[in-house]
Image: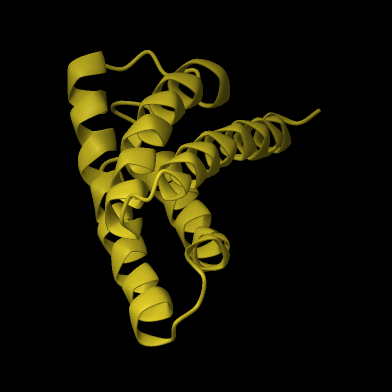
Amino acid sequence: MKDDTKEIVSYVFVGGMTTLVNYVVYFILLKIHSHWLIANSMSWIFAVLFAYYTNKRYVFKSTNNIKKEFISFILLRFMTLLIENICLYLLIDLLNLQPMISKVCVSFITILSNYILCKFKIFKEEGVCHG
């Protein structure tokens, strides 16, 4: 299998697992009556920690400086958390959709954004791609 194809397949698998972590934590927190914003933010923390490790090791096989890369990963992923929380606010509080349905809808935007950020900003080969 071509390297790019392998990377995309690996990213989709790891992304699916990350999404599962995110949804499970979100669902559990909603079930114990946490506000959707707290549930989403906490699920983001668990998912981001899982995603960093698995993307670094299994998808992009990065050997870059872990401290610099981790900080970059957290900061760029934080941007997607903000976008996700704004979208959830629009769907849940303004349009009165259910929190779990809203989470699924917003995930499509988040997943695509996260792949682009990982590929071109976080796990790029040092010295090869500047940005």
